[in-house]
Image (cartoon, rainbow, N blue to C red; front, top):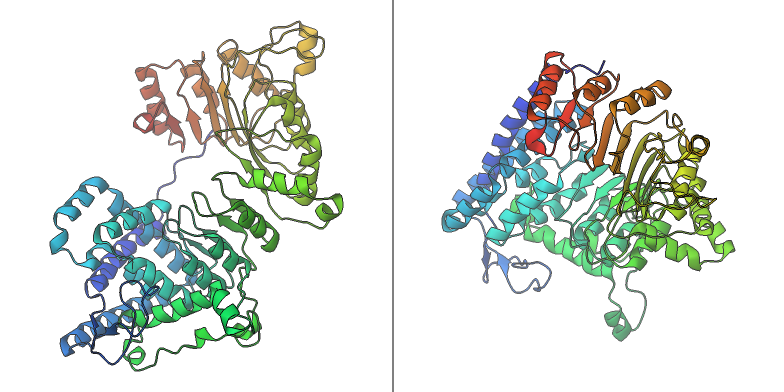
Amino acid sequence: MPRPVVPPTLYTLALRNNAQMLYQGLRAVDQLWEPPKMTLNAPRSSPSGSPHNLSTSQLFLAPLSSEEEQEEQQRLNMVQLIRDWLMQTPTLVMEDLIASLLKHTEKTLNDDRDQKLIKALINIERMKVSDIFFGVHALFAVLVDTPISKLEFSAKLWVCLWDYEQIMQSSYIHDRVCESLPRMRNLVQINLPQVATDKLCFLISEHLPLIRELNLDHSRVTDKGIKFLCGIKTLMGKSSPSEGQSQSSDVDQALQEQAALSVWHATTTESTMVARSISFESPCTTSSPIGSPGGSAGREKYCSQIQKLSLDGCLNLSESVIWLALKKLNTLKMLKYHHAFSVAEIMNKELNNLSSEEVAQLHFKLIHYNHPFPYGINVPTSLVQRISAVCPNITELNIVTEDSCVEAFSHMKHLKSVSIELEDWFGLGLFGFLKTMGSQIQELAISCSSDAEASFPPGGGQAFQLFNTGLKLARALCDPDSLKKLNIAGRCVKLQCLSLEGNFSSFMTHGFIMSLLAKNPLEQLGIFDIGGADIALGPQTALLLLKLPNILELRLSTWKLSDQDFNSLKTFVKDHGFHVYLTRGGPSHSE
């Protein structure tokens, strides 16, 4: 029987309640925050607007009035109070609480999102900048100097915050993140999609030595930012003034920007009163070489422990910097990027151009070979062998290709998760691959982008229709002897996810599923998904699959089920307390 539904624990309920209270507290802190005021007559200098473009002699921080100082001190006291409260909890509890808080914040922003944005536009003249922070600005202030190791912001939450910032034409949340990250040195994982910049990449490489997972999807990061992560930060050398001026380094500019930010945000930091009395000159503007004994106990300033780096949707990156990241970040296990080219294409091109001696010197720890839709690549066997030698630990394959190229991927000896989109048909290449690798595959997704009834002549020239995609999930219209040679049913005994798309209407029946389960009980299967053309499976088959011990989801979009049948299945699952999702055609038909 499937796993039973487990009610939320008291711990989970307590997290939700405390997350809601924390959200209200952070929003109250944000309401006390005011953007710094600028003046031409004040004695302390600071850049205005963006601290990147104006010199520090143009505008100055205006001194706070006594009333403003009182409000600022009240805000700082509240920040410290919340921090002290969090510090009384174990680190793991704190991280779970922050994760619950972020989910609550995302739900609050995303519910009726369009309507809320329209209201914000209508009332923009009456809104304060802090009205659009939703506690996130205060959260980063609270979390400085805490032992928190992960901040799992979702892409949806950052997109929502970005939408509101566009309405107010501000970047205060980004600036707060820049200010807080250097004091969150225990971070191992952080998601910064949409909001990341080259400056954030520099700060991460300088101040977060433990970072292992970094998400920069759909951000403005350029090659310069990725080079920062790789430790390429050439300072101005001992050249002539003209040469030095023409060769001003990326890191020198970033260091100056970091110093400018520290003063620009003096009115928002916990050390406000002290910051107002110090000069603009900052230790971070030193010109000592990266990795020298002068800073962080001689630590080499780059992401030396990073294992997962996600750069999907980053439009300002070149192929060369992706290859550079693969070579420089020696601990990298997963690099996600797909714009003009995928990571797989870039790696194929570079490895193909190297000599055997050069290839022998490379060793990547990548576990994911990924080239997704919309177009395919045909990788020859010799190149797959090179890839397997350079990346011996690949466990996940996601590829769009032709059937004749599939069998070559059998050289990737440790594959566990396979997703294959065929541009032609299900054929002997796929058959050979699954015959070799089927016993170790845990997740299998196969689809065909062309006519699923396309036929081909294997060997002796006899035409077969699609057949045997790993679990004998197609029945060739041929003589029994030939069919036995193609039968590899039962080889994929470790499957946890089965997802197939094609035309299986000619053979996919209840009797076929029964015979399949007789050969392979699919004891580890969690997701069963066969789509494409309508198939002759009904409630009887669903009840049979619901007996699988680890089944979690049945996707029934192309089954022959009436609304009454589907509702009866949902009632059956609910009455038996099964933790199983039934999906049919969309969210409105899911349970």
